[in-house]
Length: 232
Image (cartoon, rainbow, N blue to C red; front, side, top):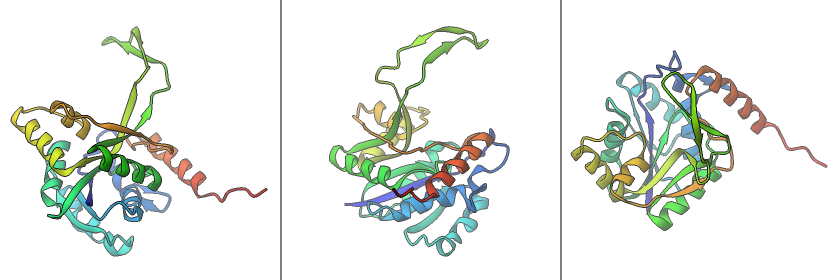
């Protein structure tokens, strides 16, 4: 059962102020970290990057620079995230059975968390990486005044990758288009069809680089993960 990975990298980084996907994390661009994780994962057979037109050749050159032998296509995306994903779905190998969609701006995804999610998806047809919400959650009004509390029982924050049977996800996005709906992730698209999605809890940090301080935190986490374990 061949599994393709679609890395979404066509955003404008407006909240960041500069192109976060090409910002240096350690000595490697953020997006290249994400690509390396999928390269290492045994459950992934093919990698497709969906990006802006001006980045196509630059990312394609990474095939040799970063040893990305699974990177088969770098293609232009759409004006919205789900349109970019749909372009990626059209480009997967004909024998693809499952597809993993990942935000390129999540560079710290652990291979073990990716492979656990893959296994769950192949059992149930649809799975997504996520984390439990442990903070106290409040609802506010337009002036940022607290109006009440939100029960965090059974609340999870969605992350990526989100991994689906290819036909299921294509059906979901076809439905999104016919309904002219706007979705921010693949789980939301599947929900519109009434499809069940199982969650796989990430056991290691998987933050999304959105603001400059996120890059600082990711740098610290990466440095910690690179340190050798202390011996007794």
